[in-house]
Image (cartoon, rainbow, N blue to C red; front, top):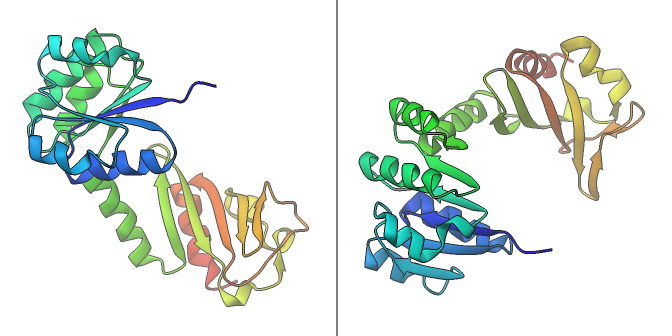
Amino acid sequence: MKMKQFAVIGLGRFGSSLAKELVNQDLEVLGIDRDEEAVQEMVDVLTHTIVADSTEEETLRSIGIRNFDCVIVSIGDDIQASIMTAILLKDLGVKTVVAKALTELHGKVLERLGVDRVIYPERDMGIRVAHQLANPNLLDYIELSKDYTVAEISVPGRLNGVSLKELDPRARYGCSIVAINKKNGVIIAPAATDVINERDVMVIIGTNKQIESFEEDLADF
């Protein structure tokens, strides 16, 4: 199977971090930035790097940008360059375009342009950290949509040895435990007879309200 190829345009803090993690996942990554110093810092990290202005159509054509499976626009604080780049990528027929938005309005413009996925790194991280601070057992929080969330919740000591049948989150709250991360491995689609222990991590899917109710009632179980 051909390895997926990614291009990351904009090698600031977010872009470089994202590009490094893609490389760590054994994926081919081209890093692009018009700042030669930013590119130089990533030369020995990424598969390929290039100094280029992504707002120039001929430059993108010469790179062969349309051949990449996914292109991420992570341009820092230049909204105009971000939008122009997104337009060119869509016009050139890039399969999947992901773009970082600096503001809600910026994100709406990107969506109107047909960008496949718009991400808000600072806003989303703020939401996740707020949830983690407010709920000590909550390890991670990923919003799938406006209404649905996947959450990782650490099992408190009071639930040690409780079976999923006893806990019964589906009947009580409407949310589902789709996996349990234990010291010796992960149980996917656990059965009602499976038992949770202190410090196991439950992966739960449901609406925001369902998961909030579940978190609140953990203390009283």
